[in-house]
Length: 406
Ligand SMILES: *Cc1c(COP(=O)(O)O)cnc(C)c1O
Image (cartoon, rainbow, N blue to C red; front, side, top):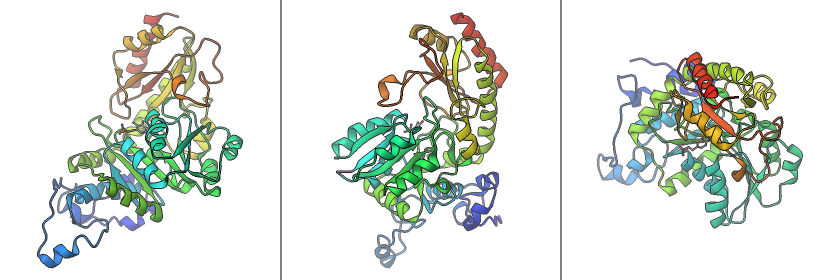
């Protein structure tokens, strides 16, 4: 039952080693490999003295009441912290959107301005224009590729910058270290939605980001059967995130935490396989006459590839492409003609998915179609490449191109 992995020295180990060992403290696992599912609302106290002590200490890893979790959730949070060099702790949320809300409600006050990347996940955008506006926070959208405009967009009320790279629909990359540095120079907290690359693909905090969040629903879960989010940060911000999450009553179920831990153990294997297949498929798509542009930062020559190569250590199976010409009905016929790709608004599972890309209604400053497309090229498709054989997926795409004609 010996596991001599030292959590305090996690940063010195390679990613693969950390993924296997992270969060598996013997005091949480007991004599088995994984922490059991502690399904608990009530924590019982030894006696009155212990009861009186309970509410007083609000430290991680101490029993108090179910809303503060139990070893299953603590193990997952600690595992995620060990995957993020520079993080003091990780807060778990019941979904990725809850993580975004929990973080923004921590770092913003009425009267503040939030700068949000224009290609951010749509629910992040509507959170800015909806809920945050109701709370007196003003959200302004910016093109993360234009650093000069970004610098000029700060005002004395700017308190936070929300980044996402690549944008999870249209896949634009940005210079995260430069954007985070500029935010810091202006006294604003930088928040990165790192769901695409995850901790194995991009080390957010060492690149200057203040808070890194993820939808664990996607790759960490990895099997399309759970909803969860996380946010990790250095000591000061972590404590603030944690207290705000407690105020909001955020807690995740131990069953889902156990599933997320199971997913985490195979994260790098799955991402490597997906990325290899995605690259092969993206390169094949780039050669098809019906394709105007492939939007995949991992693909040499594609938009944002240089930044991806400079800053990232990995990617995933999610990318988009734009069809040459045609109308929406033709694009929709293409997606309908696929048989190995499900149609669904998610990604990061073991199974491949396809959805349409029509970003124009949800952009303020970034233009669509992307530069490099000709007039008439505008109907996009986003693919989430799963663990099927890449050649089978290519054959499926080939059949769908045949179904819509040249
Ligand atoms: C899916 C997703 C989220 C939200 O996660 P949920 O668990 O579905 O709430 C946040 N950010 C990005 C980039 C996503 O793709």
